[in-house]
Structures are given as structure tokens and as C-alpha cells.
Image (cartoon, rainbow, N blue to C red; front, side, top):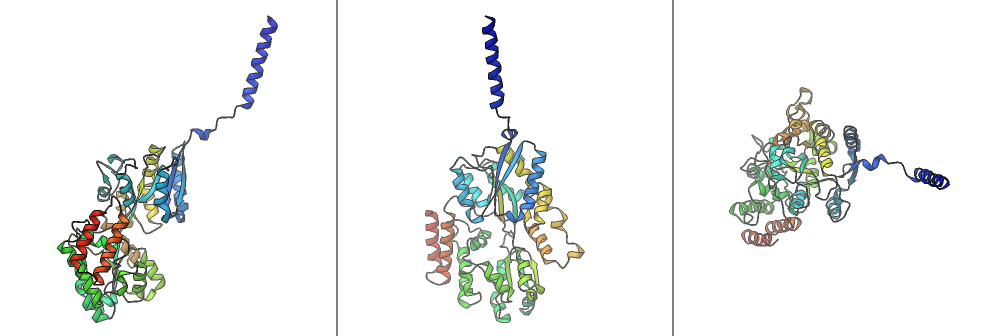
Length: 412
């Protein structure tokens, strides 16, 4: 009996030793939560983003951030593919328009109102979805008016145009007096013309054929046919407008402050006679803007940690640091009120980029809500651009072309 007991004890000891040998030590990483974070073509700022990630991980032991930078042109396609798979990222950098589309399809985790208190309230209003928000804003841009002081003086202007009406009023005379064009609106470049129309409340099938819409289209048609704006206005992009401005052929243009450096580098003589003013508006006096957002997919595995990291990335300190690396505007209200965006120092009094930055930041306090599309965005934009070309090339009367566009828009 004793031998059997000893044998059993021996077997137990051997099995215990074998278990100790074959059992792997517990990997501490298996207890960590990994937040997969996608951005759109921001690898240029890898030092900044990696720094924020390291700081966050230090303050939040047990959470790791895996950063993946995606080419801008592939962003929407990759996000859609990920939403159909089991490998959805936890936090994604997308446009406000795409965020609205995904929210309408129920693909995004709602951001509750208590998490939005730090941000520009007017911008947050544009991200409203039901009682919550579709996403959080990351950074914004808002174009300013860049103009040639020498040409303005030659045209005999006593003040700089503040509205589209002001600029249109001087356009024929400007051409005759200076030999240059007062403006070159890129009327068929993506949604450029839609942004102008939106400031007049023209942003839906039932407004595209209104009286004010017909008046606007007819104004540009008149300018186009009389040669008061370049014929390339219906084919070329803002890049070509910048080049023409640098060649002294354009008096006024709407562009982001970042293009000032391009003008300074490529056309130093024109830059010397360049100044900036607020963006042109319609009667409402509101300014348009562009926005990049951070959203959390509903299929994300670590939603709470993703939100915590997003709010960390969007605090005053990190927003200011990012804005000083590149000409974007912060959306954090405290950061926007920093002197960097509100005060022109004596040493920077001749710095056009600083002046443009302050003007641009101020415009975010009086913004025109953008047009969001539930579906068929690109088809609708293509329709509007084709309609614009049809009218300016006089292939169809304006009223009939806009009635047709209204019907087709409604169908889309």
C-alpha cells in the first residue's frame, strides 16, 4: 500500500515538473489594450504624432497605440473595406463629409455631448447627429482673400472687395484698366462653385433653379463670354490660379494661407506687392471652411480607449503644437484663443502668413454650415459642374439648364 502511495506521489511530482516546463510565462502584452489609429497622409508629422502617442502611453499604462498612416487617395476605400471586415481600426481620421455619410449608415459610434465641450461650438453644430455627434473635429482650414495691391491701385480701387457682389461689380472695369483679371473662379473644380452657392443658401434640388441661382450663373456666364474671366475658369484648378496670380495676371484669389509661401518662393516680386484680407462672403457675411475629423467605428474593439486618446490628441497643448508645424487651425476653443491666433506681434507685423492665420482663425467664429450628402456626392458635384459648363458655353438657356439639374439632383 505504501509503495502505491509513493508511486502516486512520484507521478504527481513528475507531472507537476512537466507542467512547469511546458507552460509559457504569461505575456504582459496580452493584458494590454491596443488602439489602432488611422490617419490620412500625415507621415510628414511622424515626430509629432509619435511624441503624442508616447506621452499618452506613459500616462495610460496598459494601452498601446498602433498608428497606421494611409495615403489620402485610398482613405475612404480602406475605411469602407475595414468596416466590412473583422479588422476595423479603433480611431479613424476622415473628412467631415465622409463622417456624416458613415453616421447616416449607422457605422460610427456616437460621440456624446459631454465630450465636445472643449471645441468650437459652431463647428460642433455642423457635426450634430441626432442629439450627439458623428465625430470629433481634429483641425480646420479657412481660405482668405489674397490680392495684388499694385493691380488694385492701378484699377483705382478705394477699398478691397468684401463680398462676391463687390468683386463682381469691379470685374469688368478691372480688366479694362489693368489688362489683368480681377478673378479666376475655378467653377468646375470639385465642389468649389457649390461652396459659393451654399453661401447664398443654394444647396439643394429646390434651390438650384431659384431666381438668385439664375442670377449668379448668368453673372459668370456674362464674364466668361465677355472675357472678363479667363476661359480656363471652367477647366483648370486652383493650382493654375496660383500660377497666374504669381505671374501678375490675377488681382484677387481665394486660397488657404499655406499658398502664400508658394507665391513667396516662386514669385518673390509679386509677393512683395501682395496683401491678405478676409474671405469673400455673400449677404450673410458667413465664411466657409474645411474640416478633418476623428471618428470611432461602431465595430471598434476598444472604443473607450480610442475616445480617451482622441481627446488627448485634441487638448490645447497638442492642438497648438500641431498648428505651429503646419498652417492649419485648431478646433480646441482654448487653443483658438491663444495669442498665436489672435495677436500680431510687432516683429511679425509684415508677416503675411501670420496676418492670414489670424484672419482665418477669426473666421471660424462665423461659419457657413457646409453641404453634406447622404449619398451620391460625387455624382451630384459632377452634375453641377456639367451644368455650369453647359450654361457658360451657352449650350442651353440658364433657366432650362438649372431646371434639368434640379430634377436630376432630386433623382440622385
